[in-house]
Length: 395
Ligand SMILES: Cc1ncc(COP(=O)(O)O)c(C=O)c1O
Image (cartoon, rainbow, N blue to C red; front, top):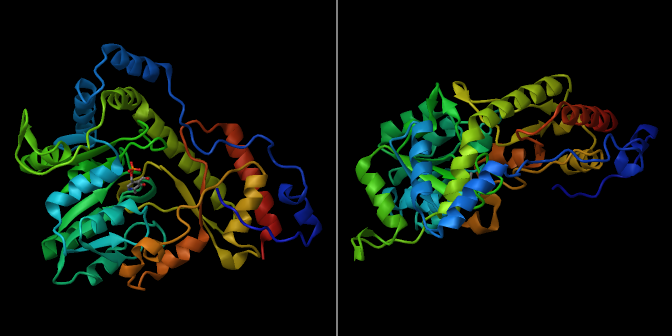
């Protein structure tokens, strides 16, 4: 949640804000996310518990097969989490010392696992409207040493895949898509598994499909799928026959069972997220100074997050002050993200000082509550709170 010291109220109107002692729009906050399990999920998990066999088995296999089919990939491999999924994807395709083009605007794992591989991340700026990797900046940053592109489908919106693949084809680069936030999103009506060399997913507790911890890797090349499976489990091709060095990045069948059970509802929940996004779009269209997220042309987003931009020049407050006032009215917010990746201390050695859009986004963005359980009443609260806060802080 956002924290900031709010400016003291200057006007009578400001005193109406809950932050300064006024009556909040709602005393019961709108839930920011919905993570509750259904009875069917608990029953599915119980079946595995009763079986006593907790390792990756039939439920992980079922999840892999269904996920690959639903995302239009040939092969699916479950793994321990989305970070492991990135490692499993990067290791066969990227060599230490390679230059890899990465987003400046994403969650750190997309980039930190490039560094963990011993490769050199080169930051690419974001598109200011869609937040996705800017394909023109991508093309500018290719060098003789570039071997791969690691691109996130951020907030649930597919990146500009055609443009990215065109750069990759021109320079013979591998493409790894991080779809941790983009479960079941499509691009030009095709599932994301159809694009790039490998796609990775996180099944972390707050993701659209959540198993607590968990991940999935998909690809369309049989040899690569075999290599990833070997890496996932100590390079073991037969009982105690270790063909190559690998890890233990396996999932377990309780997580697999929860994943399969929740997957039964994911399409309907995704449709609900899209209806919610349309509702937010309509609310924001009536408020000057708040910019709704745009989707990449041809992309159908799944709105893991609904992230808004505050046009700072039109307001007398900072983003954090704005959010603090909204929070007090009963509307929780979160900042995805407060820093662009090149400005993270862990990645500052690689900062190319050349991602101005990402630098500005870090001062303007905030995410509104988004999940399949939002009600009409929740939207009423958000709309009223936004108008109330905007009216006080409008410059
Ligand atoms: C874009 C992105 N990539 C990778 C990850 C890492 O996934 P995990 O937390 O499952 O390791 C996340 C998790 O939040 C993410 O949002």
